Length: 441
Image 1: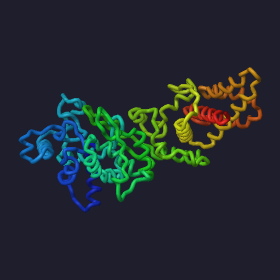
Image 2: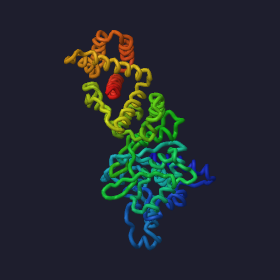
Image 3: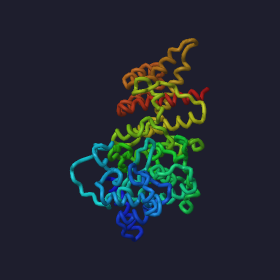
Image 4: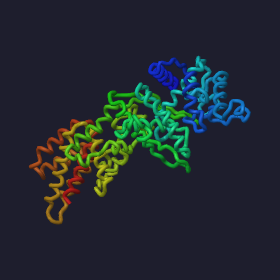
């Protein structure tokens, strides 16, 4: 199980840093159990495990407490039972009647008790996102920094007793987000922690971060890496795994780079990092993982397709973008930055702006009561394919011969770009057109 691998990897790091020689069982007994389970409020949940079940009263009396009785049952099960999901985190059901029986096999594997204790330790490094999915990442800095936040989760639960416990994965996501925040103070972390809460089924709990928020956090947390690989899974009544998914950190970081390039002259209104990181995506986490690699394409803004020409891509709405409040300007900037990052060519923004200016100029040439040129402008902006776009530009160049160089350059650049980038370029033109119309009111 990958949980065991991560547990053992962390234990090596911990022993090296602290000059100890803990086995997984010893670490669980002397460090992990005391931190995670001695209090009535546990830090993590493992379904069907002894910590999930109510112990017998005689066992509670015998061992001196509820959690101690549960721990005694866990130790006994690890010693006596076959490896299964209740004692070996992430493993299969105990038999073919369990909901995860698809993992059950009659092949024999040598799984010793340290392997099972390691799985508990490793599972506690999951980074939770909305949808109850978790990411396990094999990176020394990520592991050690997540570990540094565990004791603070215990303090947090003590200070806020009405908050739902057993959500270490969601805590880890918030903890890493705080660690990369400019407001975070290493000397007094509890004073600078910002843990967002939500209410679910009448209970206050740590807010589940969107998967895109966590990806942005990882992008800033380990900027020196171009790629990282995450094991992505959901441990529930039925275990689900997406396997190992590459996350293209260098691609995602380009959103921030293009933010600085595109809005270099608009420092007073430039999007802040936290506004970019709140980006809602068109793809849910399952769909993003199905792409094979999580990168810029998987971070497509949620409502961007509403403003793409109808027929250019699936679900394109063909709407004109309206500038009406602060949120609309933030969305405009988000859409533009993401498109530019995908197109990866700043010259295209200037070209889109010039074509938009030409279309606005074209509309002013209409004779009184006629809308012939306005219709041509609309046809250009609603081109659903490169073929229609070039056909409409060939008509436009006859109406605006003074813009011939700009139009020719637009055709040349459009022919060079990948086919699936064209809808983004035409949408960029539409945004620039709507922005210029708004400014010229």
